[in-house]
Image (cartoon, rainbow, N blue to C red; front, top):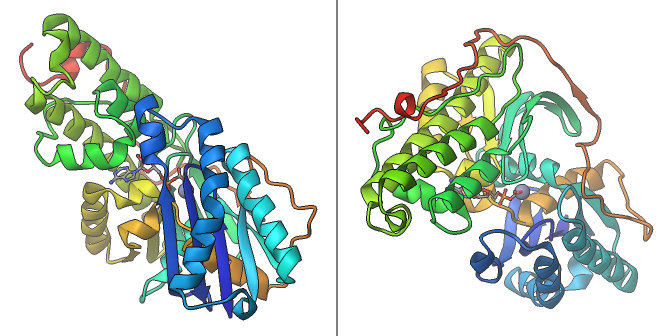
Length: 371
Ligand code: KG4
Ligand code: ZN
């Protein structure tokens, strides 16, 4: 079963051919970093225009790289949300046209379901039920996946997504866009204990919150900006200090993500865990999650970094299951900027061990070095 996957949910134009939902024949991702970098974030209108330019070359390249023609395809799986509406419209309009013109069945795939199924593209893949942490630029969710299409949401972010926090903090530090990879790299040179940034353990909940952490970083940067020459932060002058802030920030995000997953493992007795979404490419998160999984004797499934960030192979993988379940989309398919996972129920109950939320009010209590 050969499925062409298409994802244009955000700022990457991607197309892939996946066989039987498991084997990647091609996975082409055209990044728009160069378009958005100078604005310090994604400009939705520019993203849509770039998708229009790139969609056909990327799809053609994915077919070519897979040695496949349109006639060989069993279905087209397209991401129809959540995401930037203008971007989603390009992919879904293209997929509908191709489906109609070539007479190939069309399947609509939720972007988050795609992230969950990225774990099935590696040689070793999880059995049900498993715990799935999706940490991306737009979402941070912790789910129990009971079977295909059966999701129980334990928690989600109440404000910023984890990746959004990486991007905003990188901007504050003058490190450019996207923030995650650069903070990941810079953190290796910094002291993760230099600043005691807050970890928000939302009481009685598996929910996440990262906006307080971002504000704490902003306060430190502002304070240091007053006490040091303005160009020093992010200007390369105090690169050691910037690396310390980056490493301390990253440690705070990773602590919370690892701890919440650990709580869910203990409380729910689940023995398999998958990570996905762009933040799952983070080297410290991968290392710390692997240590925790070893301590708890649970099986951890970590897709390779290129399958954690947005890609169309994950859309084709999830699309395979939808197709096999008989799902079909028509030419009336309309993408949606906001779209919950299909058949998702949610549960709010107290995790097994709680730490009270910590709020840090003074800069000096965050910065462990004397000011
Ligand atoms: O899954 P993704 O490619 O797109 C969305 O669905 O949002 O995730 C993109 C996010 C961005 O916020 C980016 O900064 C973050 O993932 N990211 C990382 C790393 N690589 C990408 N965050 C931390 N460490 C990384 N190595
Ligand atoms: Zn994504």
